[in-house]
Image (cartoon, rainbow, N blue to C red; front, side):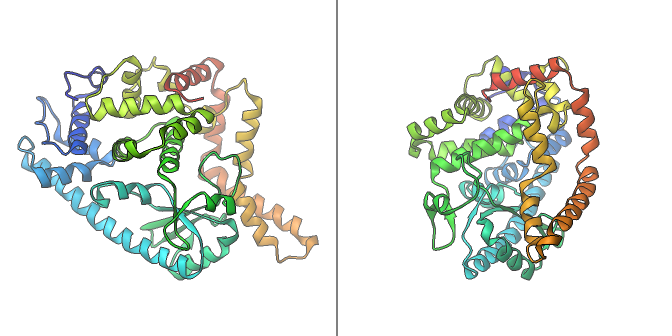
Amino acid sequence: MSPESSSSAKSLGIEERFLLDVVGACLKEEELPNPPDNFSEDEFAKLARAHRVAPLIGYAVRDRGARGFSSALRAKLDLELTVAVAIETRQSSEIAKIDERFKAAKIRFLPLKGRVAREFYKEPFLRPMNDYDVLIDETDAEKVANVLTQLGYVPVSSELQGFRKDNWFEVDLHFNSPLQEGARGAGPNFWSARIPLDDFEYRFSKEDFYRYMIEHFAKHWKRGGALLRDYCDIAIYSRKFGGELDREKLDSELERYGLARFVRNLERLVDSMFFGGETDPLLDELTRYAFGRLDEKDESRKALKIAAIGSEIPQNASFRWARVVASRVFPRAAKMHFARRVQALPPALRITKKIALWIGYWARRLFRVGFFKNAFALLAGNRRAENEIEAFYRRAGLP
């Protein structure tokens, strides 16, 4: 996709247009294009770093060269690649230790998100990730906590879902299936439908992982946007496995959960962004949304200005309002943790202890997540703005 040929790219800045061209060349393993006139190397490097694609570009520069790039820009990108390699090496070593301990403790687990997505890149360090997301049985939560504690991790919250080690790596635990399967938890039916690598480590099927990627992407996209790294995940996976997917089954499941049209638009978008595909006004709008460069009058710009709690709650849907608020006031992970905390107490003391735990939890959460700011944004939001946001979501294909 050249800057001149894409209507989507024309609405962006010079550096943003060039970034799409460069990332597209990286994904296609082609020679990198020369920078355009009036090009800011500092702004380009900043964009590449912010969208977590700097290692991908740095690898292409080191592997195939970039005659049009200055020595200063090449040095910046090479440094980003060197740092990414070092981080990935350390992360992979740590993850291997965790997986080994899980298996020794007979804990079934299924890695999620970046831990799996990086396996589909040419090299794992080309896909930066922040933490290790892993799905486990809720009944194994205490065993997992013990394993991570022995490895030097400490809980980052009272819910015992996040564990951090020396402020450099975090493990996030998931107890529920990330797919919209109509049932909570990761019980026997969940594991029997997954692909075992051995007695304890599992993977999604190709169709399920693609659907998981889409559902996870859509959640972040609807809450304010996604990084180019996330669009690259979709592009690489669909190019690598698109011909192997059971498309009929996949489309049926996506249609069932209201994601089929969004997926078609997303696949057209990444084709337009990176592979020279045709564009149209909708893709132009979605491309600008990807970079957060939407006009003040754009309906989708308002979605970025309303706090997450407001953007999820249309005023004409009181049942959704109640559901979202309840999920924030009484998150399921906290319920499970508190239930375990009071289990050893006499029945007469459990309710008092639970009340005390909830009060302490709310006191911490109110200020940590900016509850008052979100509540103000919700109250200040008007029906017209929310309807425009919902209209933008519908244009993109989300229910």
